[in-house]
Image (cartoon, rainbow, N blue to C red; front, side, top):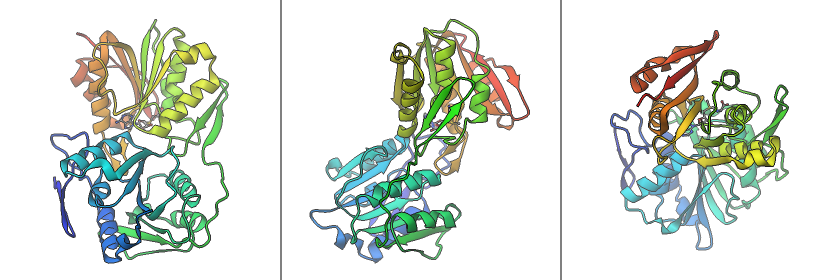
Amino acid sequence: MNEVLNIADQTLILHRHPRRKNETFQAWDSADEYLINHFNDSELGQYITDDGQLLIINDGFGALSCYFKDFERTVVSDSFLSVGSIKLNMQRNRCGPESLLIQDSLQSLPTNAKVVLIKVPKTLSFLEYQLQQLSAVISDDTIVVAAGKVDAIHKSTLALFEKYIGTTKTSLAKKKSRLIFSLVDQREIAETEIATTWDIERQGWTIHNHANVFSRNHLDIGGRYLMDNLPEGDFTKVIDLGCGNGVVGMAAAEAYPNAQITFIDESYMAVDSARINMLKNFEEERSDNTRFVVNNGLVGFKGRSYDLILCNPPFHQQHTITDHIAWSMFNDAHFCLAVNGELVIVGNRHLDYQDKLERIFGNCELIAENKKFVILHAVKME
Ligand code: SAM
């Protein structure tokens, strides 16, 4: 795996965090390279005056944060893993942290950005939220350039730039990436509500979803299947691992009234939606016995401490399809469960999580299945 990015006048060593032994994915892509080269060729640095700054939105793993180390800059991300990668890659490349502010996507954007570089995110609703935020803080002389893989830029993507920023055109494709240039000439500052709410009738819950939350327009059918197949027991410490909007943990809060429920996700927006959903749909005393943690899986959590972990694992990291996060979640769960503690997961039939769980736990039972999903149950033995 190539970890050395030689670009323009700089050589950067970049890793995806957490670093894996046989990493197959690079920590930057051709869209990062295209943005950096364009910035240099067009001498965009000259527009970043003393009272202004560079705003970087959705830096994946730190290539942009590191490359632009000589500028005062703010980096915005909804991903705990991205933020961790940015921090570590900054250290590795000896970029002092003084001129960099990292913030999550729920915070307000700075009002003095002179140049804005955007990596187009996976979901359109999240892009819309970010462009809406941006339209409220930029001025007519702000330069806005976005980049993404050709297959992630559609007419609907460009329509959002037209709507919230102004006249938009695209570059030629290079190494399967494209740039988007928007002039700030006709932005619409009017706010439309990007967060969604919908009801789960059976439970009588109203579910709030920030723009970047998994399955934001409906209950995920995998999540629903897990909610319908919770194990019986007198559990006291339960984790909803990869909680998204929190529906699985909420079902656990209902099924085990005395249990402390910990909701964990690497998306700041997901954890905040789960917090809102517990607050809105449960009595105060019940929602008091809950914790909400933005984290990479269970890294840093105490071993042998929980008696039930529920998980509907992800199979994407940003634009990449991968099962390595599921793997590490199952390993984390094994470490954090008390002896006789249980892990219950839902997965697409074809993903073969059964084999992984058997290897980690030494046991795995199929407790329910339908045409699409399986529910698997593993017990920590010692
Ligand atoms: N539990 C929710 C449901 O059933 O609707 C969401 C499940 S979704 C398939 C997987 C979730 O895992 C996403 O919300 C994603 O943000 C989260 N996730 C991805 N990588 C993670 C990581 N390293 N640590 C914690 N959560 C992660």
